[in-house]
Length: 263
Image (cartoon, rainbow, N blue to C red; front, side, top):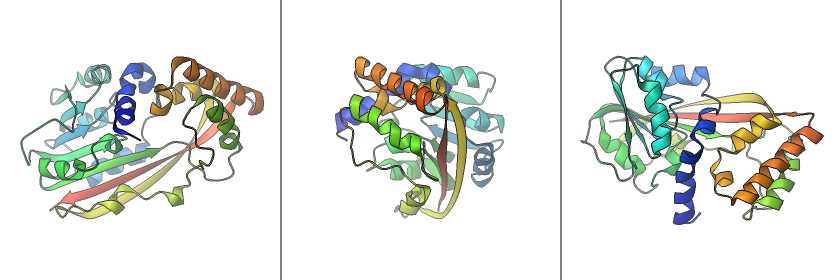
């Protein structure tokens, strides 16, 4: 993906903030283990990168942490700001994390949920390390939608919609299996970090045609399609669910939680 395409996809979420807020939340067990492993609680100073519409932010604030959420999209940030209004120690800043600056060693935890992959790969880990106090943690949640845990006839059938309506469709694309996914913590190569911990969660979710298209409509590769192609693609998927899958599909979503500690 070239830099311009990456920028367009990264910025596309702000145009669908309401639909983005309807995305499924993070598994309860993941949230609880994150709070425990990252020692997030009363008095903890937490930086959240790319909170979106605050799917995780409220849980952090409810623990009594002092939270600063840095969000690129102003509309997304406004939704998160509304959710965090009851918490005096929580705030939202509209900024591009890659260009944003803060005092070094000013946070006990840096958290990025379904956002770390959008950051500058050449500097993101080192920048997070510089913002953490000694002993602080970097917590990354990676989300992969619709992984293969068994035969998935819907995935195979849906490729006809992608082939027709998405110009960059790869006919050789294959569905990701959990065993093929390498979690973030396996690739950390910054000397300041040590003690990697990894947890994995798999969620099976059933969607109606409308609900699944609502979700797909928040994915960046769909958002950057030209409007006629986007409408055609989502109509194709909706018709497929209704006509061949009795109106519902089950998708298996994979979450990887990686935590590393700054020495």
